[in-house]
Image (cartoon, rainbow, N blue to C red; front, side, top):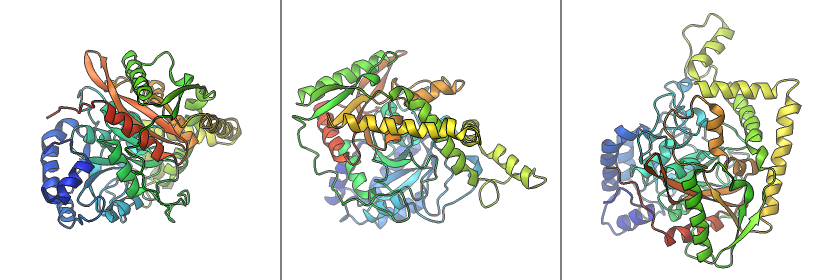
Length: 480
């Protein structure tokens, strides 16, 4: 059995009884035992529980018998939930996130905890409190982040699919760097209940998969209104696979001048330009557009995201659960020492920045102004989508960079998400699809094509992404 079996292919084998859910799981377990020591995509694995759920799988359900890897920021009942941070100590979740409940209702089951940047703060998975994850294409390089473990597991054939979370590109960027498909749904499309919060107005859970069709199948399972999440939207039920297989003739796509600028890795630019030509050959029409407030997106994002992080992470204080310092002498020192010991450097940096921009005398100058610019960025996309059906760009300005290459310069690391974070600020949907390779330091590395659609246009992205995917030869990582 191929380690790069898609959900669609696995379901055919399961339904035809050519393989059982337990046999499928055992194949993956063998792959994980052989490969994960070199990739370190998994933080933990509950083999006994996974086997129990495989034996009970209902093959009549849409995802019956399919195991799904889960990012460590998404809680699963009785499983560790650390968000790759020491501050949560030995915490195990007493409940399932809504997306886990919905996966089980569709017949799938959770399979292992995936490594990530601590509290999803990072673009390289080097900020994990436990260990970095390595890119399957080159172990000297990062898989991206913050959902780096989720992307690396799929790319290395250690999972058919995983769930990640995307706050500023944390699904799409690692999907690009690892060579898999990564979807950020429209904000409010998928419940955030049970997602350990980073920035509540930006976070969104989504799938990482081998194929566009698999991404649509998973969104079918996890999307929908949830009364536990006040930001969850009440929308009509949809079959996100319904437009897969349709051609894209006559569709118009925008090419934003602000996303095709100097500084993009030449091989990335060449691969994306070739992808644009391929979309044209499939009958789509390119349109030059402008997103004029793009230049303010990075600074706007890092004001809003740090402010929300500072607020959300205030709950981790050593009082109710998780790590508690043994060095405290009074209540204040308990707070200070617990947080000093429990949080890593990047998390501390963002808490300090966020506290500053929310403080008296700075709130209006920074946070309020950033929210106003966010509105302008959202309007840029609204105006663009009056002219085009979707927008294309590189997912990342570069391929996978070396471990340690950017850790000494946070600003360089922050720019890794320059083409993705505006999608979170505006709440629209986006997907990264593999579109080729770029030579970097003599190593051939995957490149991702980003497709952005207006809010609630996931079916458009799946239609376009699938048409493009089927028209090219996508090479999988040959790691053993």
